[in-house]
Length: 214
Image (cartoon, rainbow, N blue to C red; front, side, top):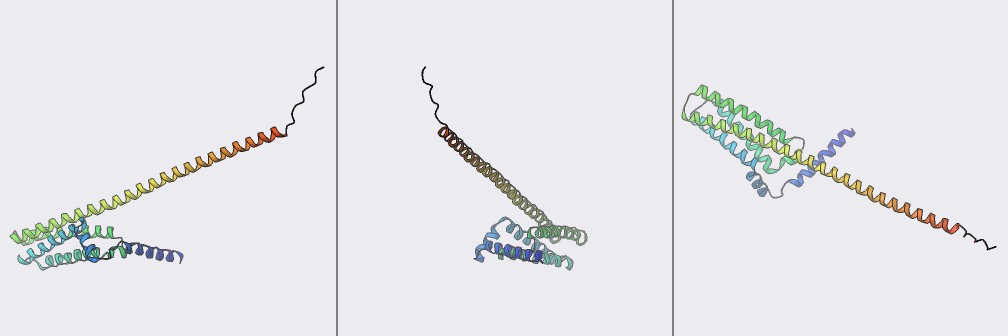
């Protein structure tokens, strides 16, 4: 029960932190994402997949290949909408970088298989070749997106590790400086105590009487 309450509290706190990351104006947030690297990669990938679907429709190719490509367009569009609206900051129950990487890998595999099968079964029509080329280009963009996502995750972890190391070094320096100050204060107190003790001894010792001359 305590673990359940703790996880619920953690989700509430993460959702509150994510809500702060969402820009209040949707248009500005959309422009920021669409201009960024991941946004441009997703839009370019969707355009290549849509171009492949249009080429297969004109050719015409088998309906199953067209359905797969249109489904992939819808999936990429849903990811774009989620990132534009900032829902990935609010849906904390999903690890979005890993989910996006998994989607990219599956998409790349499906697109490569579709491109090879279309060239194998449908012949060498110009629309078939252009659609297969679009599939291969979209698969390459998926691999590039995976590398970018992995690089960003590695960079965040490296940045956090460096930050923790710097905080640890600062804590050690702070502790050493506090220890030095305490040591100096202790030495000063000891010196004062010794001086006071010596003064007390000097005051309590009676002066020596000089012997009279015979």
